[in-house]
Length: 116
Length: 112
Image (tube, rainbow over all chains, first blue to last red; front, side):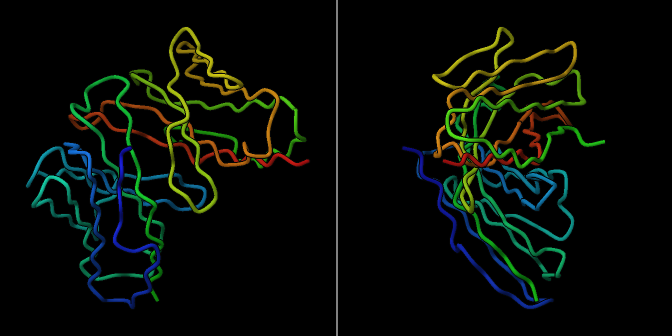
């Protein structure tokens, strides 16, 4: 069974704090993704990575950065948290070439972040 | 216009009912299509892929109409355990990479 874990289920931070969200997958997947999910908007891609030390911007990268130093770990960093970054953050991973037509993604349980 | 649009619901149906969800997508070059299921306060999980010819998995039937850019999911003989949000997902080539584009989801509530 694929397992994707996230460092926290719930997190409360103050405006301006630096926030680290960590994601670990145990199935040797090449691809990892960070999304945020907000009511009425669905999941939106923040950043993704197809290999160690490689990162690509998704649709809403502003205010975020990422780090992938090891294959199994993908970190999302909020450099200076703001209230509009209050959201559910979901990490996902997938195996092999994402060019494969029916490639699917496996999600972690999510981190609910509240920025006060 | 959103790239993937779904009726948000909620659909409130009794056990045993048949319910259908629809989804439209805007990018005609989209390559593959999926339905994910998300339980309350849980992560999304793949329910089924959607093939051009239509496909069935037990009580669930998915259909794709490329000409109309329309995807559907039919659930027959609804169970209480089917209560969840159903996400329509489209894989699209954009910015040099394949990406999954998620709809906002349709909420289903099955009652006794």
